[in-house]
Length: 337
Picture 1 (cartoon, rainbow, N blue to C red):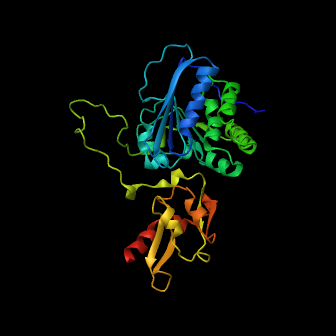
Picture 2: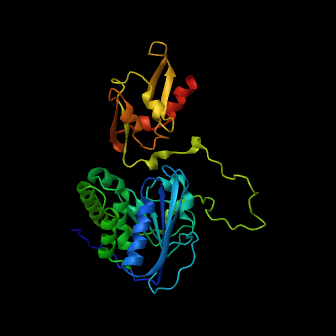
């Protein structure tokens, strides 16, 4: 049986609740939104809806998941993005730096929950962003230790911020949603949920936490004055400026250079060209594998599966030397070639 309890938070129940989940594809935000909505609508018999926003290639790209529900059962007919959430859930703290626009619409009525080991008062928000409560839960760390899904841990922390939904109803939906998992997977999710329920820290936001320069908004007010030119991509993608660290789930490939014989199999299957080479006529076909550019690594583990000599292995994020995670050495080596 699932064990449920509430952290000692006192929230008054609201007539209307709006939740926005901000994540990177592969972290389970879409599933988490479905579970919350099902618990609210089918479990509590509220009116509401859920939908997510993501592209065809979800893993490694931003995902927004929205949940609305009315405890007084007013019809909810809108399916627009939630601009002013009551609860903002950030599935990786790195998004606060790489995607500061996720704070769009956050105000004194908004609670912010972040997947991070930091103390809530250590976070910095864009100028003008003043949430009500700031909370943190080390979901990635718990997921690595327990084998639980990241979204299950986040749901454990989320439930304390939505008193309108009972733990029992949320637990029933979680069990049903993950019913096809193995007994070990179910047990891991149960442990993860309980850890999330009791492992988060929450503080009242401090007035001076808004120290970052404001970024562009996510939801521009279109009109004839500022409407973009038709057929033009105004924000083209640029992988040089992207950092996919947030896509990894606490683990990443580790390279043992003593075992590697530079066969290049890893580079053939890597979807993001994470491996760094340099010319060396004394090694094999003239190329030597230097290491992994972790800026682009999403943690898909395809390279580990294909390595013929086990030179690549799966390790914890904290096992990666900071000297290797710093991409400056990669740029220096590339400039030499």
